[in-house]
Length: 228
Image 1 (cartoon, rainbow, N blue to C red):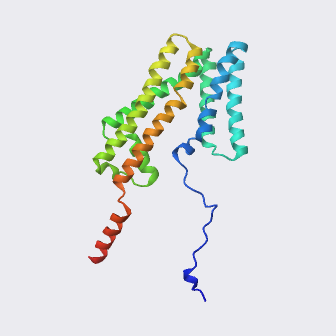
Image 2: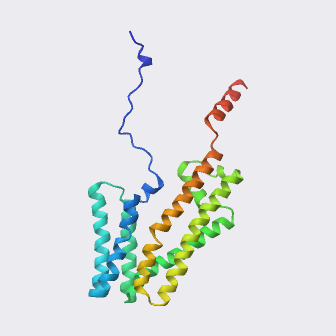
Image 3: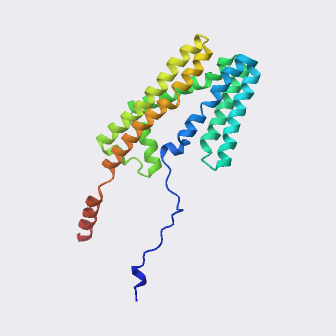
């Protein structure tokens, strides 16, 4: 007769797994969907005018949100994207100029870039701060110099992305190059975000190895505590 204690409990295959950072951003499809409102805004403005372009961009953002709801995929990125498009459309409406659609993103890049740079200067790299909050490590990573350096690199990568976006797109805005603004928004959007995410993934893995002891080291520490 088998011992009930020896019977392993069945594993629930439906147990939810922790989402990756890319999945929290909406995945590859979410990054691609974020470019759709811009793709339709500029042609619609050229063909039918600003009012139609505004409603077309908002309609596409709304369609993306509904599509993600139907497919039961993470909707937070779509909600954020819809709000962002609505704000950009409102600015374009208030300024009466199609290039006003890009104004919010330009100055948001300036603010984000400044925040990332400042966090490195004060030795609180934002990537480390945010990841420490998400994984429950808090600020333990700050006691490891190499971990701080890894987060400095990742935070610096995001700073370069946002500062570059601001410099290029602000120049195009001043030159009234609305079409090229759309190209820059897309070209400097998810492709650069993907690069920054790769650097962030490297930094997070490196820092986690430094902060969290290896399994054999952890068991050794527990054994020493039990003997004491």
